[in-house]
Image (cartoon, rainbow, N blue to C red; front, side, top):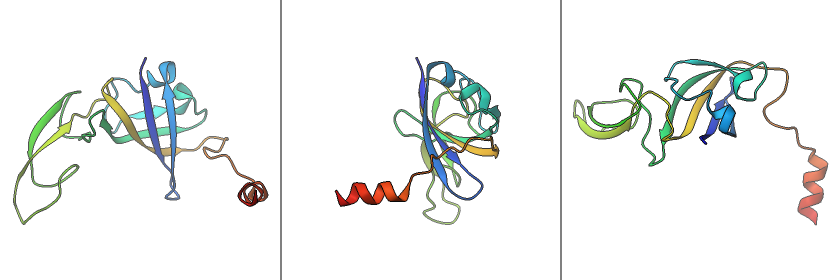
Length: 134
C-alpha cells in the first residue's frame, strides 16, 4: 500500500505534480537515484523518466552518494541538504539514502521522453473567468 507524490520536471522548465498509489507506485520501489523508469509501468504511457531525488516522510532529502534505503548522519562539505557556512567547513547532516523505499513520500523525476498525452490538462480561459466573476 505504497503511495508517492511525483514531481515531474519538464524540459521547458515547468514542473507537474501527480500522486501514484498501489500498483503504479510499486514500479518505483527499490529503484535508485539515476535509474530510468518507463512511464507505462506507472500510468504515463509513452513517457520515460529518470529519478533525480526525493525526500522521506520526515523531510530529509535523498542523496546519491549514500547507499541503501536508510537515514544516515553524514559529514558533508557541499551537495544536497547542505548550506555553505564558510570555505571548507564540514557539517554533520542527516540525509536519506539513494534507494526508494516505503519511507519515501516524494520522488523527483526528470522527463527524458514525452508521450502523446499532455501531463497538464489544458484549461479553458473563458471558464476560469466565469468562475471568478461568479
